[in-house]
Length: 214
Ligand code: DX5
Ligand code: ZN
Image (cartoon, rainbow, N blue to C red; front, side, top):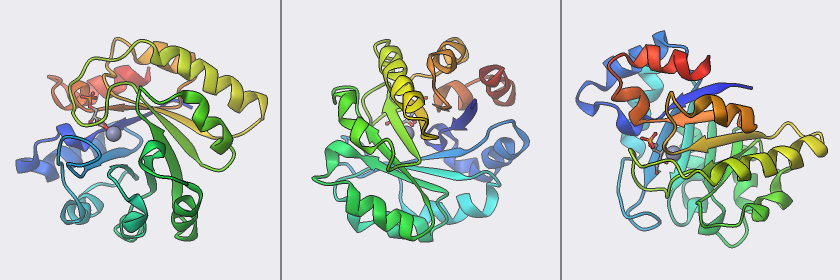
């Protein structure tokens, strides 16, 4: 699959509805929603109050990426707030299984995420238990960072595992994705590319999305 999920973190929050209408018009597949708590990552983004206007104005599925400690406390509220998928970090929890069950019980798609310093092999036992895995290609916390090239080998490794076991689990990549590296990431086996600054800071965001998908 070749899906693009622009990250709303790089949108203009003073004109959020306009940016969401651009997303609606564009070839973007999902809207990626980055929630940061200032504890799991050294940055704070936004929370529930923004889920409402995003659900109202955005016609694309909301792909929620929780960069928070204790995701078990909040995953159900994000499901109720209209998330299409909810992901959290494996390294933020002791046991992801009961938290994945909370999301599944709401009928929402599940995603497990790891930062670049977490061994990609730690995802393997969960590949048949989630709808998607998200490999961070920068350290979670900020938009506009540089893509970490070692991510490519991690994509290939996870792709092989998924294909060998004939699973449908999606591979999502987040951080430093742009029109120059998108094709290589898809070729390595990624299904979904998140792009924040490369979309919203582009002179023509719709064209940037189109080029990443092409
Ligand atoms: C980083 C976030 C990313 C970020 C990507 O912590 O998870 O989704 O918005 O931004 P860019 O595409 O600018 O690296
Ligand atoms: Zn993200």
